[in-house]
Length: 81
Image (tube, rainbow, N blue to C red; front, side, top):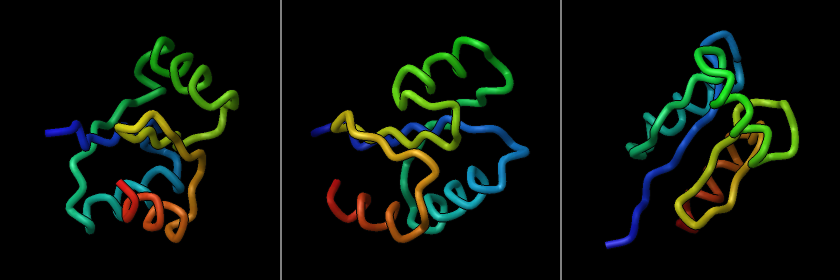
């Protein structure tokens, strides 16, 4: 069975992060939350993945990622995985 876990790099103060988490919760998606405020290494990892310092960075099991996705973009990607 393939790994279907989504990883979300973000911070509690980030409105877009909270919105993306709420959508994932509503859709019943299994995801791992990585707080970039709690760890410089986590922040560096998110930047290495996306090439940007914007959050959230949502990483999918297939290796693809979205940065600051709209709800529509996130739903579209979830339909593909």
